[in-house]
Image (cartoon, rainbow, N blue to C red; front, side, top):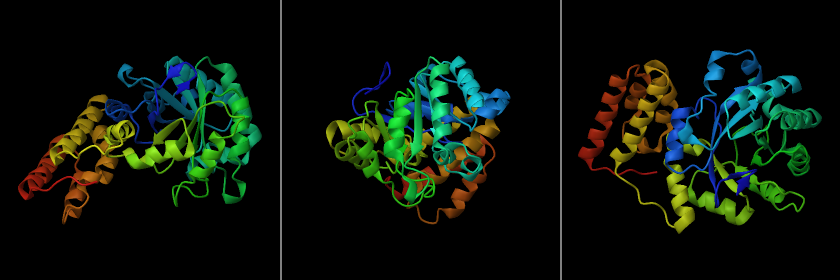
Length: 334
């Protein structure tokens, strides 16, 4: 599959943009485990043009993570165009426009999936950005605002006419947020629309290798995007890629293998940020990582790990968990 001139190979698997998750340290890990393209956390167009330090910091790109897409969101044409030009200075491989974020502080103000209620403005923003930058532009959106306004089939054609190079569709409406199941049938309809010629990337509930296989085989998408299924589990890309190639599940490794990956993530976050912020950025991954599932009486240990404020304290607790698993001769289970 190609997005403009960027060749992502056969059946690519992409890391979804996620706020407070897809920092550079996590992106590098996912890339190492086989992610074919990674996305930054989404960036506020308003914050970019106001030169907010925290937002500008999210624009940092490591050469080892390429190809990488920078994602922006906003609700004003001029602001979004200015933000896209600022992003282009950071030399990403792709500039992605977020028309899918469902959270109230974004969608409620008309940005993200809020744009699904103002399609003319969505199209004006998209076309204006495409004309303003030389970097390939893509869009990520949802099926529609709610069940009664699932407009994605017509909208996909309109966005394509604006000049975007690929479209990612999350198989839920804004009203669903992240509840219920993603509806891949409409994603498949977009892909199989003979008038569509740009790549269609499917997103939503890809949490297993088998789910990725079904997305390609049943719905015909050009690529799949993994979001929440990767949090605390960057090795999911290795599992999916192995299954797509061989049709077999990758054998599970010892508990310590996966624990070492989480330790590396903490170390990478600390190196990229500092000890305090590095640990904060790691907590979400530790909280949901499947490697701790099924450990008896783990609740208090988990709380202690999430409250740890120094690397030494956190790693000592992680060592304690690993020692327990080793003594019990327990095995890792998804």
